[in-house]
Image (cartoon, rainbow, N blue to C red; front, side, top):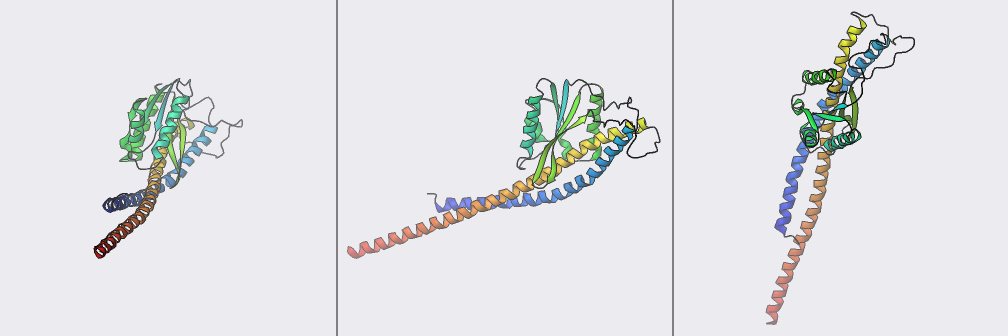
Length: 288
């Protein structure tokens, strides 16, 4: 049986751990609110931008396909997995690693490169796959302009033929306790089929031409899609960390309660033994 001093030390250690996990939970909750507001505000803009592109494209000449929508034989794929720079977020990072490994296995016959966003996923893939770039620093000072710069590099590589497809792998934010791993094709973009009537759902007056508008809207849509995925991942990270720290605090409290009961029982047994020793000693003196 462990001595009382050792048990007291374990109780104090668990109490210190509880203070840390509780503080991390509150910090994550604070960051989650800002990240959740950001992704909730961006989603309507992204959806509306896609609707405009679909409507403009549906009224365009079907022979005029955007350079970003031209499909070709897939030989080289770029994956952009988005994770975090820090741990202690439950299954947040491991779920991305599992999904990426599954995609690697499905496309083993193709040339695969990785643009890692997040130190955790970079560490997971750098020894097994060719790393095209490591953009983990994006998460430290996230802004649309910084993400747009990365998206432009990827788009240029696609246009030059270095990659035939580009996919994003990230955790989509549902709520603080739920994150869903998503794999989205960034390039080539999927354009809706033009109807036989060739008419858009919304009547637009175009200035300048439709093709010029699409040439401006499509790159912005690609940048927005990548930015939205990173914001989704960021909100998911804070939600996962808040949930993980909440569970860790509860588990620590349960373990502490068990140890306190065990400590009290051990202390009571020690006191009982001391009393028995005293009584036995007194009886021995009487009989001597």
